[in-house]
Amino acid sequence: MKKLSVKHLKLIRNLICVAGIVGGFILWTFLPDVFTNTKLFHVGNGAYGFKAGALILLPLQFLAFLPDTHSSEIHTEDPAQRATLMEARARKDAVRQIFTALFLALTICAVMGLAVATT
Image (spheres, rainbow, N blue to C red):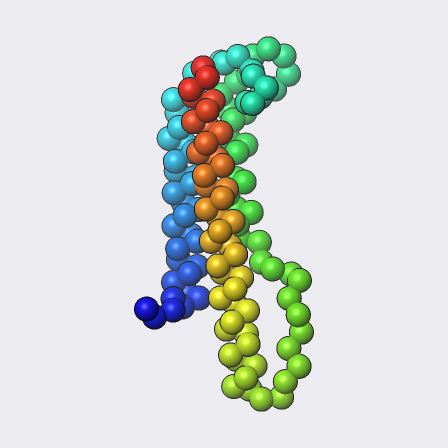
């Protein structure tokens, strides 16, 4: 099987992010306007929370776009070897971002789904 390019990996990451946001928003539409706060899902102060406060979960998906800032330095004079090492670094970062996006999408949908199920 041929390895996916960095461009394809970033496209997969973007699709997962969009799916997480859209899935969370669809589940959000099923929440009642005012619901009882629980230990798992608590919005605002007091015993009741408003539906709009639950939208704070959706932008969490953008954390998947953060790059890896702990990369090691490349010490080589050969441009071909440098390009190979940079490509490998970009692939590794894109794969990490895919796993982060998948984890965040599942978390957002799970929390919204549990909030809908408990109301």
